[in-house]
Image (cartoon, rainbow, N blue to C red; front, side, top):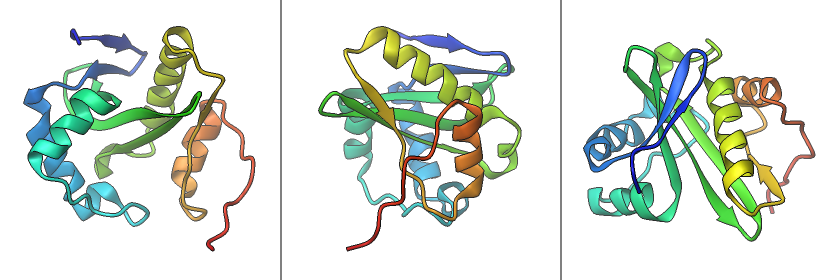
Length: 146
């Protein structure tokens, strides 16, 4: 896949490349980055590279100055796309998440044969829920633990 850049007002989304694997591995094994609502990932570097470059749509979130501040990705569930995202802690609550969500949603509906995009968050993850609402998502329900 060639280098794709989705341009926003404050951020850009660029296709992840092999050069990004080490940084994403660092992020995904950092409790501060993953936050209290996501588990630390236990993938090998090779497994992570496959996830990033083959199995999903995976973008690096960059500020306009090129600083890499997070990731956003999506994967298929039937004809539905699920989205996941995270930002480095010092760049949260600045509107970057909502903008990244809007960019990937527009991209997915324009390029994929899908009928729905969904996101699951922890019920206590108010910051992500606010970013999703700013991006046009609405809460449909609460999944109960079995």
